[in-house]
Image (cartoon, rainbow, N blue to C red; front, side, top):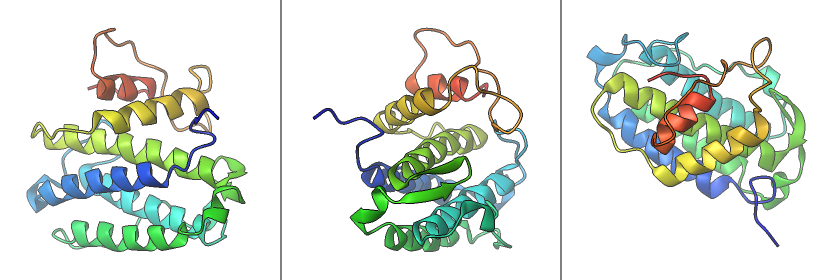
Length: 195
């Protein structure tokens, strides 16, 4: 049987994406929190809040609740507390999605009712993309995982065709990109970002 993002277990990829995110969070210093990000509606601080909040939302969906009940932002976090906040969110999300049966359970995601594995795949895409956003804001040359970006791009191309942009779809138009661009730049461009 062929394994595709629609049939595979996305949890290992999600946890790798969260490992990558934890390494990025560990590099952040309080004086960087008000920097702009390629996710133009967010400063770095706001983007970190969105990332942690999104993981809590994913946890809630894994526990059986609808996404709309949880805002994709977190509460007040001390400037030096972002790594700890991410760690707590990760512990919760792993527990919430530990049961294999949840992969095929109908789940109320922000984009509608879909199987749990589709929800998890969407959050792989989100975490990998926001890792790029954070790395760009930091400007330290952090080495992002190419394999994760390939997975995220496959998911993005499958669930976000170029024609479905704007309105309730929170992604800009696909940006032109050099054919030789690295996988992270191609993913960012597909999701409407510019470096």
